[in-house]
Amino acid sequence: MTDRRRFEQVVLPHVDAAYNLARWLTRNDHDADDVLQDAMLRAYRFFDTLRGAPRPWLLAIVRNACFSWLRTNRPADIESLDERMPEDETPGPEILAARGVDRRRLNEAIAALPVQFREALVLRELEDFSYKDIARIAGIPIGTVMSRLARARRLLAEALKPAAAAPRLRVHK
Amino acid sequence: MRTDEKLHAYLDGELDAAASLELEREMAQNPALRAGHERLRELSAAVREKADYHAAPARFKVRSQKPRAWLLAPAFALVLAAGIALGVFLAQPRDDDSLGAAVVATHVRSTLAGRLIDVASSDQHTVKPWFNGKLAFVPPVKDFADEGFPLVGGRLDVLAGQNVAALVYARRKHFINVFVMPTKEPDTMIHPPGLRQGYQWRHWRRQGMEYCAISDVSDSDIYELAQLLYQ
Image (tube, rainbow over all chains, first blue to last red; front, side):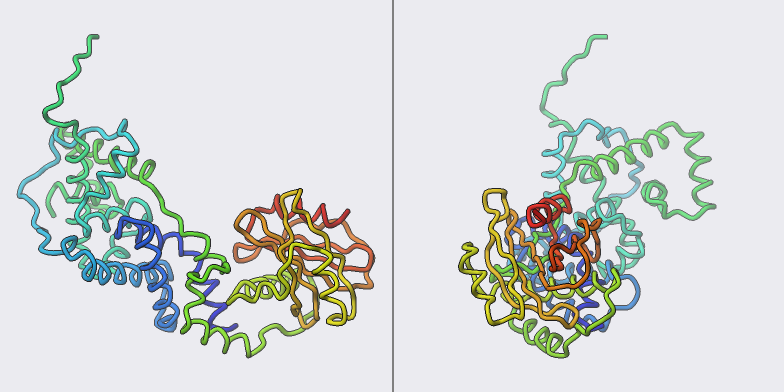
Protein backbone atom coordinates (compact mmCIF):
# COMPACT_ATOMS: atom_id res chain seq x y z
CA MET A 1 0.00 0.00 0.00
CA THR A 2 1.29 3.45 -0.76
CA ASP A 3 2.10 5.91 1.98
CA ARG A 4 -0.73 8.11 0.85
CA ARG A 5 -3.32 5.40 1.21
CA ARG A 6 -1.87 4.32 4.51
CA PHE A 7 -1.99 7.93 5.68
CA GLU A 8 -5.62 8.21 4.66
CA GLN A 9 -6.52 5.05 6.48
CA VAL A 10 -4.48 5.60 9.61
CA VAL A 11 -4.51 9.34 10.16
CA LEU A 12 -7.59 10.81 8.49
CA PRO A 13 -10.03 9.09 10.88
CA HIS A 14 -8.62 11.38 13.61
CA VAL A 15 -9.06 14.64 11.75
CA ASP A 16 -12.13 15.58 13.83
CA ALA A 17 -10.13 15.30 17.04
CA ALA A 18 -7.37 17.32 15.38
CA TYR A 19 -9.75 20.06 14.31
CA ASN A 20 -11.51 20.12 17.66
CA LEU A 21 -8.20 20.75 19.43
CA ALA A 22 -7.11 23.39 16.90
CA ARG A 23 -10.49 25.09 17.17
CA TRP A 24 -10.40 25.22 20.96
CA LEU A 25 -6.80 26.47 21.03
CA THR A 26 -7.17 29.16 18.36
CA ARG A 27 -10.78 29.94 19.30
CA ASN A 28 -12.01 30.58 15.79
CA ASP A 29 -12.88 28.58 12.69
CA HIS A 30 -10.73 30.40 10.20
CA ASP A 31 -7.53 30.15 12.22
CA ALA A 32 -8.26 26.54 13.13
CA ASP A 33 -8.55 25.79 9.39
CA ASP A 34 -5.22 27.37 8.62
CA VAL A 35 -3.44 25.68 11.48
CA LEU A 36 -4.94 22.29 10.71
CA GLN A 37 -4.02 22.55 7.05
CA ASP A 38 -0.45 23.22 8.03
CA ALA A 39 -0.48 20.47 10.66
CA MET A 40 -1.87 17.86 8.26
CA LEU A 41 0.91 18.59 5.80
CA ARG A 42 3.46 18.24 8.54
CA ALA A 43 1.83 15.01 9.64
CA TYR A 44 2.08 13.65 6.12
CA ARG A 45 5.70 14.69 5.84
CA PHE A 46 6.59 13.06 9.15
CA PHE A 47 4.33 10.07 8.72
CA ASP A 48 7.30 7.72 9.00
CA THR A 49 7.92 8.96 12.55
CA LEU A 50 4.59 7.53 13.67
CA ARG A 51 5.04 4.91 16.38
CA GLY A 52 2.15 3.49 18.31
CA ALA A 53 -1.30 5.05 18.39
CA PRO A 54 -1.95 7.60 15.62
CA ARG A 55 -4.36 9.84 17.54
CA PRO A 56 -1.96 11.20 20.19
CA TRP A 57 0.76 11.39 17.55
CA LEU A 58 -1.41 13.52 15.27
CA LEU A 59 -2.66 15.68 18.13
CA ALA A 60 0.89 16.37 19.28
CA ILE A 61 1.62 17.74 15.79
CA VAL A 62 -1.58 19.79 15.79
CA ARG A 63 -0.87 21.08 19.27
CA ASN A 64 2.62 22.21 18.31
CA ALA A 65 1.29 23.87 15.17
CA CYS A 66 -1.27 25.71 17.31
CA PHE A 67 1.29 26.91 19.83
CA SER A 68 3.68 28.18 17.18
CA TRP A 69 0.77 29.90 15.49
CA LEU A 70 -0.23 31.49 18.81
CA ARG A 71 3.34 32.58 19.51
CA THR A 72 3.38 34.45 16.20
CA ASN A 73 -0.17 35.74 16.06
CA ARG A 74 -1.38 35.97 19.64
CA PRO A 75 1.67 36.11 21.87
CA ALA A 76 -0.44 37.50 24.69
CA ASP A 77 -2.29 34.19 24.84
CA ILE A 78 0.76 32.20 25.85
CA GLU A 79 3.07 34.54 27.71
CA SER A 80 3.99 34.25 31.36
CA LEU A 81 1.35 31.86 32.47
CA ASP A 82 1.33 31.29 36.15
CA GLU A 83 1.48 27.57 36.73
CA ARG A 84 1.55 27.69 40.51
CA MET A 85 -1.37 26.44 42.44
CA PRO A 86 -2.49 28.29 45.50
CA GLU A 87 -1.64 26.09 48.46
CA ASP A 88 -4.06 23.99 50.42
CA GLU A 89 -7.16 24.09 48.36
CA THR A 90 -9.25 21.13 49.12
CA PRO A 91 -12.32 21.62 47.00
CA GLY A 92 -14.54 23.82 49.02
CA PRO A 93 -18.09 25.01 48.68
CA GLU A 94 -16.92 27.56 46.12
CA ILE A 95 -16.97 24.83 43.47
CA LEU A 96 -20.60 24.85 42.69
CA ALA A 97 -22.72 22.13 41.26
CA ALA A 98 -22.42 22.44 37.50
CA ARG A 99 -25.36 20.27 36.64
CA GLY A 100 -27.72 23.00 35.50
CA VAL A 101 -25.18 25.21 33.82
CA ASP A 102 -26.18 26.87 30.59
CA ARG A 103 -24.45 25.46 27.50
CA ARG A 104 -23.41 28.81 26.09
CA ARG A 105 -22.04 30.02 29.38
CA LEU A 106 -20.05 26.83 29.81
CA ASN A 107 -18.51 27.15 26.34
CA GLU A 108 -17.59 30.76 26.94
CA ALA A 109 -16.03 29.88 30.26
CA ILE A 110 -13.90 27.14 28.70
CA ALA A 111 -12.85 29.46 25.88
CA ALA A 112 -11.77 32.02 28.47
CA LEU A 113 -9.41 29.63 30.28
CA PRO A 114 -5.68 30.26 29.82
CA VAL A 115 -4.56 28.18 26.89
CA GLN A 116 -2.59 25.45 28.64
CA PHE A 117 -5.44 24.73 31.04
CA ARG A 118 -7.93 24.81 28.19
CA GLU A 119 -5.74 22.35 26.32
CA ALA A 120 -5.58 19.92 29.23
CA LEU A 121 -9.32 20.12 29.77
CA VAL A 122 -10.22 19.58 26.10
CA LEU A 123 -7.85 16.63 25.76
CA ARG A 124 -9.19 15.04 28.91
CA GLU A 125 -12.92 15.73 28.78
CA LEU A 126 -13.62 15.93 25.06
CA GLU A 127 -11.08 13.42 23.77
CA ASP A 128 -10.89 11.21 26.84
CA PHE A 129 -7.13 10.93 26.70
CA SER A 130 -5.22 9.40 29.60
CA TYR A 131 -2.80 11.58 31.56
CA LYS A 132 0.02 9.73 29.85
CA ASP A 133 -1.28 10.64 26.38
CA ILE A 134 -1.92 14.24 27.40
CA ALA A 135 1.64 14.41 28.71
CA ARG A 136 2.90 13.13 25.38
CA ILE A 137 0.77 15.52 23.33
CA ALA A 138 1.57 18.61 25.38
CA GLY A 139 5.19 17.61 26.01
CA ILE A 140 4.93 17.95 29.79
CA PRO A 141 5.42 15.58 32.75
CA ILE A 142 2.41 13.62 34.00
CA GLY A 143 2.51 15.54 37.29
CA THR A 144 2.03 18.76 35.33
CA VAL A 145 -0.92 17.24 33.48
CA MET A 146 -2.51 16.53 36.83
CA SER A 147 -1.95 20.00 38.23
CA ARG A 148 -3.10 21.69 35.02
CA LEU A 149 -6.28 19.68 34.93
CA ALA A 150 -6.99 20.42 38.57
CA ARG A 151 -6.35 24.09 37.93
CA ALA A 152 -8.46 24.06 34.76
CA ARG A 153 -11.44 22.63 36.59
CA ARG A 154 -11.05 24.99 39.50
CA LEU A 155 -10.87 28.04 37.21
CA LEU A 156 -13.83 26.77 35.25
CA ALA A 157 -15.90 26.21 38.37
CA GLU A 158 -15.05 29.71 39.55
CA ALA A 159 -16.05 31.18 36.21
CA LEU A 160 -19.36 29.39 36.40
CA LYS A 161 -20.19 30.75 39.82
CA PRO A 162 -23.21 33.00 39.79
CA ALA A 163 -21.98 36.58 39.70
CA ALA A 164 -21.08 37.55 43.25
CA ALA A 165 -23.11 40.75 43.10
CA ALA A 166 -26.23 39.09 41.77
CA PRO A 167 -28.93 38.97 44.39
CA ARG A 168 -29.78 35.50 45.55
CA LEU A 169 -33.24 34.34 44.74
CA ARG A 170 -35.02 33.26 47.82
CA VAL A 171 -36.70 29.93 47.46
CA HIS A 172 -39.61 29.27 49.71
CA LYS A 173 -40.14 25.68 50.51
CA MET B 1 0.08 14.38 45.68
CA ARG B 2 -2.25 16.85 47.29
CA THR B 3 -5.71 15.78 48.31
CA ASP B 4 -7.15 18.16 45.78
CA GLU B 5 -5.19 16.59 42.93
CA LYS B 6 -5.99 13.13 44.20
CA LEU B 7 -9.66 13.86 43.74
CA HIS B 8 -9.07 14.82 40.11
CA ALA B 9 -6.90 11.78 39.45
CA TYR B 10 -9.51 9.58 41.10
CA LEU B 11 -12.23 11.09 38.95
CA ASP B 12 -10.12 10.49 35.83
CA GLY B 13 -9.37 6.89 36.75
CA GLU B 14 -5.70 7.73 37.11
CA LEU B 15 -5.21 6.88 40.77
CA ASP B 16 -3.74 3.48 41.50
CA ALA B 17 -5.81 0.90 43.35
CA ALA B 18 -4.23 1.43 46.76
CA ALA B 19 -4.53 5.21 46.62
CA SER B 20 -8.12 4.92 45.35
CA LEU B 21 -9.07 2.70 48.27
CA GLU B 22 -7.48 5.08 50.69
CA LEU B 23 -9.29 8.05 49.17
CA GLU B 24 -12.60 6.20 49.25
CA ARG B 25 -12.05 5.45 52.91
CA GLU B 26 -11.29 9.12 53.54
CA MET B 27 -14.39 10.20 51.68
CA ALA B 28 -16.51 7.84 53.75
CA GLN B 29 -15.33 9.71 56.84
CA ASN B 30 -15.35 13.18 55.44
CA PRO B 31 -18.58 14.56 53.99
CA ALA B 32 -16.88 17.73 52.69
CA LEU B 33 -14.44 15.65 50.67
CA ARG B 34 -17.27 13.51 49.39
CA ALA B 35 -19.22 16.57 48.34
CA GLY B 36 -16.10 17.93 46.65
CA HIS B 37 -15.80 14.76 44.65
CA GLU B 38 -19.46 14.92 43.68
CA ARG B 39 -19.17 18.52 42.45
CA LEU B 40 -16.09 17.68 40.43
CA ARG B 41 -17.90 14.77 38.87
CA GLU B 42 -20.76 17.05 37.90
CA LEU B 43 -18.43 19.64 36.45
CA SER B 44 -16.68 17.01 34.38
CA ALA B 45 -20.00 15.58 33.18
CA ALA B 46 -21.25 19.06 32.27
CA VAL B 47 -18.16 19.69 30.12
CA ARG B 48 -18.50 16.33 28.40
CA GLU B 49 -22.17 16.85 27.67
CA LYS B 50 -22.31 20.52 26.86
CA ALA B 51 -18.97 21.72 25.53
CA ASP B 52 -18.95 22.17 21.74
CA TYR B 53 -17.20 19.47 19.77
CA HIS B 54 -15.88 21.01 16.59
CA ALA B 55 -15.81 18.40 13.86
CA ALA B 56 -13.45 19.09 10.97
CA PRO B 57 -14.94 20.71 7.88
CA ALA B 58 -15.69 18.19 5.16
CA ARG B 59 -12.80 19.22 2.99
CA PHE B 60 -10.36 17.76 5.49
CA LYS B 61 -12.05 14.40 5.11
CA VAL B 62 -13.12 14.21 1.50
CA ARG B 63 -10.88 15.91 -0.93
CA SER B 64 -13.28 18.42 -2.36
CA GLN B 65 -12.62 20.71 -5.26
CA LYS B 66 -12.07 23.83 -3.24
CA PRO B 67 -8.66 25.35 -3.83
CA ARG B 68 -8.09 25.54 -0.08
CA ALA B 69 -8.29 21.80 0.34
CA TRP B 70 -5.16 20.80 2.19
CA LEU B 71 -4.46 18.00 -0.21
CA LEU B 72 -4.06 20.48 -3.00
CA ALA B 73 -1.10 22.17 -1.37
CA PRO B 74 1.69 22.02 -3.94
CA ALA B 75 4.15 20.00 -1.91
CA PHE B 76 1.51 17.46 -1.24
CA ALA B 77 0.33 17.28 -4.82
CA LEU B 78 3.85 16.34 -5.92
CA VAL B 79 4.05 13.54 -3.41
CA LEU B 80 0.63 12.33 -4.49
CA ALA B 81 1.45 12.44 -8.16
CA ALA B 82 4.33 10.10 -7.43
CA GLY B 83 2.01 7.77 -5.60
CA ILE B 84 -0.54 7.79 -8.36
CA ALA B 85 2.06 7.27 -11.08
CA LEU B 86 3.02 3.98 -9.47
CA GLY B 87 -0.38 2.69 -10.49
CA VAL B 88 -1.83 1.06 -7.45
CA PHE B 89 -4.90 -0.14 -9.16
CA LEU B 90 -4.21 -3.54 -10.57
CA ALA B 91 -6.78 -5.81 -12.03
CA GLN B 92 -8.05 -8.13 -9.36
CA PRO B 93 -10.61 -10.87 -9.11
CA ARG B 94 -13.85 -9.06 -8.49
CA ASP B 95 -15.15 -10.50 -5.30
CA ASP B 96 -16.98 -7.94 -3.27
CA ASP B 97 -14.12 -6.95 -1.03
CA SER B 98 -11.64 -6.24 -3.76
CA LEU B 99 -14.35 -4.46 -5.72
CA GLY B 100 -14.90 -2.29 -2.63
CA ALA B 101 -11.18 -1.58 -2.33
CA ALA B 102 -10.91 -0.70 -6.03
CA VAL B 103 -14.00 1.48 -5.97
CA VAL B 104 -12.84 3.38 -2.90
CA ALA B 105 -9.36 3.80 -4.37
CA THR B 106 -10.72 5.13 -7.64
CA HIS B 107 -13.21 7.39 -5.87
CA VAL B 108 -10.58 8.84 -3.55
CA ARG B 109 -8.16 9.35 -6.40
CA SER B 110 -10.83 11.13 -8.43
CA THR B 111 -11.46 13.63 -5.68
CA LEU B 112 -7.78 14.58 -5.50
CA ALA B 113 -6.30 17.53 -7.31
CA GLY B 114 -9.31 18.45 -9.41
CA ARG B 115 -9.50 15.19 -11.32
CA LEU B 116 -13.16 14.72 -10.60
CA ILE B 117 -14.57 15.97 -13.85
CA ASP B 118 -13.24 15.85 -17.42
CA VAL B 119 -16.39 17.17 -18.99
CA ALA B 120 -18.28 19.61 -16.80
CA SER B 121 -21.89 19.89 -17.75
CA SER B 122 -25.28 19.47 -16.21
CA ASP B 123 -26.64 18.59 -19.64
CA GLN B 124 -26.94 14.88 -20.26
CA HIS B 125 -26.91 15.59 -23.99
CA THR B 126 -23.44 17.08 -23.64
CA VAL B 127 -22.04 14.48 -21.30
CA LYS B 128 -23.25 11.40 -23.13
CA PRO B 129 -21.75 12.20 -26.55
CA TRP B 130 -18.51 13.18 -24.86
CA PHE B 131 -17.95 9.51 -24.03
CA ASN B 132 -18.38 8.54 -27.70
CA GLY B 133 -15.19 7.22 -29.16
CA LYS B 134 -13.45 7.38 -25.79
CA LEU B 135 -14.89 4.12 -24.56
CA ALA B 136 -15.94 0.88 -26.21
CA PHE B 137 -19.44 1.40 -24.86
CA VAL B 138 -21.87 4.26 -24.32
CA PRO B 139 -23.02 4.69 -20.73
CA PRO B 140 -26.59 5.79 -20.04
CA VAL B 141 -26.45 9.38 -18.83
CA LYS B 142 -29.34 11.04 -17.03
CA ASP B 143 -29.68 14.18 -15.00
CA PHE B 144 -31.66 14.00 -11.76
CA ALA B 145 -31.59 17.66 -10.76
CA ASP B 146 -35.32 17.63 -10.06
CA GLU B 147 -34.84 14.74 -7.66
CA GLY B 148 -31.99 16.50 -5.85
CA PHE B 149 -29.08 14.86 -7.67
CA PRO B 150 -27.91 17.28 -10.35
CA LEU B 151 -25.49 15.82 -12.87
CA VAL B 152 -22.30 17.88 -12.77
CA GLY B 153 -20.19 16.06 -15.32
CA GLY B 154 -18.34 12.95 -16.31
CA ARG B 155 -14.88 11.61 -16.84
CA LEU B 156 -12.97 8.56 -17.95
CA ASP B 157 -11.52 6.48 -15.20
CA VAL B 158 -9.94 3.15 -14.53
CA LEU B 159 -11.49 0.77 -12.06
CA ALA B 160 -9.63 -2.42 -11.21
CA GLY B 161 -7.78 -2.28 -14.49
CA GLN B 162 -10.85 -1.65 -16.60
CA ASN B 163 -11.81 1.54 -18.40
CA VAL B 164 -15.03 2.90 -16.97
CA ALA B 165 -17.28 5.88 -17.41
CA ALA B 166 -17.62 7.94 -14.27
CA LEU B 167 -20.71 10.09 -13.89
CA VAL B 168 -20.56 12.72 -11.19
CA TYR B 169 -23.66 13.82 -9.34
CA ALA B 170 -23.84 16.49 -6.67
CA ARG B 171 -25.69 15.97 -3.44
CA ARG B 172 -25.75 19.12 -1.35
CA LYS B 173 -22.02 19.95 -0.99
CA HIS B 174 -20.88 16.43 -1.74
CA PHE B 175 -20.25 14.40 -4.85
CA ILE B 176 -21.35 10.96 -5.81
CA ASN B 177 -19.28 9.05 -8.34
CA VAL B 178 -21.20 6.55 -10.41
CA PHE B 179 -18.95 4.13 -12.23
CA VAL B 180 -20.42 2.43 -15.27
CA MET B 181 -18.89 -0.41 -17.28
CA PRO B 182 -20.25 -3.12 -19.55
CA THR B 183 -20.85 -6.62 -18.20
CA LYS B 184 -22.03 -9.96 -19.52
CA GLU B 185 -23.38 -10.98 -16.14
CA PRO B 186 -27.13 -11.10 -15.54
CA ASP B 187 -29.04 -8.26 -13.90
CA THR B 188 -29.04 -8.00 -10.12
CA MET B 189 -30.96 -6.01 -7.59
CA ILE B 190 -29.22 -3.08 -5.92
CA HIS B 191 -26.93 -4.84 -3.49
CA PRO B 192 -26.79 -3.90 0.20
CA PRO B 193 -24.39 -1.06 0.96
CA GLY B 194 -20.66 -1.58 1.15
CA LEU B 195 -18.65 0.48 3.62
CA ARG B 196 -14.96 1.17 3.74
CA GLN B 197 -12.80 4.04 5.03
CA GLY B 198 -15.85 6.22 5.60
CA TYR B 199 -17.15 5.81 2.04
CA GLN B 200 -20.25 3.93 1.12
CA TRP B 201 -21.28 2.39 -2.14
CA ARG B 202 -24.10 0.57 -3.86
CA HIS B 203 -23.47 -1.88 -6.62
CA TRP B 204 -25.81 -3.46 -9.20
CA ARG B 205 -26.04 -4.77 -12.73
CA ARG B 206 -28.71 -3.80 -15.16
CA GLN B 207 -29.18 -4.33 -18.87
CA GLY B 208 -25.61 -5.23 -19.66
CA MET B 209 -24.09 -2.53 -17.52
CA GLU B 210 -22.45 -2.77 -14.15
CA TYR B 211 -22.89 0.21 -11.83
CA CYS B 212 -21.26 1.31 -8.65
CA ALA B 213 -22.31 4.53 -6.89
CA ILE B 214 -19.93 5.71 -4.18
CA SER B 215 -19.70 8.76 -1.95
CA ASP B 216 -19.22 10.01 1.57
CA VAL B 217 -22.88 11.02 1.73
CA SER B 218 -25.27 8.82 3.67
CA ASP B 219 -26.28 5.47 2.30
CA SER B 220 -29.89 6.60 2.05
CA ASP B 221 -28.83 9.30 -0.44
CA ILE B 222 -26.75 6.84 -2.44
CA TYR B 223 -29.59 4.35 -2.45
CA GLU B 224 -32.01 7.01 -3.64
CA LEU B 225 -29.74 7.85 -6.58
CA ALA B 226 -29.21 4.14 -7.27
CA GLN B 227 -32.97 3.66 -7.52
CA LEU B 228 -33.29 6.58 -9.92
CA LEU B 229 -30.54 5.12 -12.10
CA TYR B 230 -32.01 1.64 -11.89
CA GLN B 231 -35.34 2.68 -13.40
